[in-house]
Image (cartoon, helix red, strand yellow):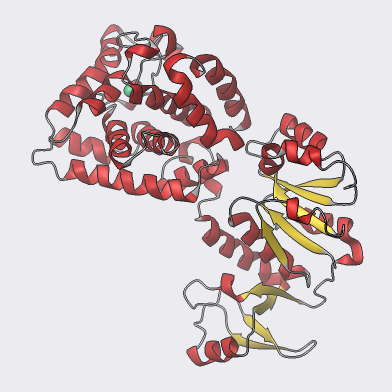
Length: 442
Ligand SMILES: [Fe+2]
């Protein structure tokens, strides 16, 4: 019996693929985070996985090469961080078997063509004008996304609810009692239905990552989407959400928060995007390290919110390095503001309650860089607070992806430069944690 198996560490890809395949074929889809258990089964298996899965398990795939010629793979990619080099690596790893590539946006026709090309008659098609949708994916509250039917005979369908209306309780109860697992929607409505369900599964804002630079990180949802695409888990994102919320409340509850700081906290610009992204990145990495605990998470969140509180002008905040063209183009007064903004921010921290020395160190040192190339002091790796070493890696990462965009070219440049900058001395351990978090799509 032919079967489809989604290989992935999480459930999101499985939900998306099973929803799509079940709509077109009378085939159930399995989910697995390992393919070893399928090695001894017959060869009628179509594996579907993200390209990062192939790269992460390269050695295991290479071990498969003998006697596994008949297995088939559809490898999903997202255009974002998938370039010629990744394609070459995946192609080489899977050279022992038939495989094809498809965009993660499965609605595009190519996915179906690939499946049919690979499996032919082995997968039975749903031959009607309806598509099947598993009931458990269907609802947004109880409202029907589109006109919805149940199947009551071989080719007989009965509409149970109109688009946008609530499914009556008694109908729902009846269906559940009968053990019905699928609803049916007209094929023409399926794309709309699929998109809407997928947005729910992936937390929405999918367009954010591929959108233009100015809206890539302008909301927490977009930061989530971006970080997910970089390999950060849902669990870590929730942790970061909570921490950032608590940090914001800590500031709002200050007895005497200066007016300029109130206004600063409300701003939506590069400074706030950098702050949000840095804190999420730092918390994600910190979670991999022994000193990752709620207290240190909170310190990173507070430091990231206030790191540039000494600057009013976001143009100046965008200057990350003194040797950059942006810095060289400033007048003397502006240069002084940039150089002094870490110590100005520490002065602000001094006036607030509950800001400990670690937070002040991180803020003071957030522009220090390896080999004494940062500012204001030009400190070396072993002269920093150890929390700053990790924070600096994340600050640089956030600055780069906001400035240059979340795309393959930026990621490759980061990969190369960061290896040179951060893989030795006191930066080495935090850099390893950074790679552990982002290794699947660095
Ligand atoms: Fe700064």
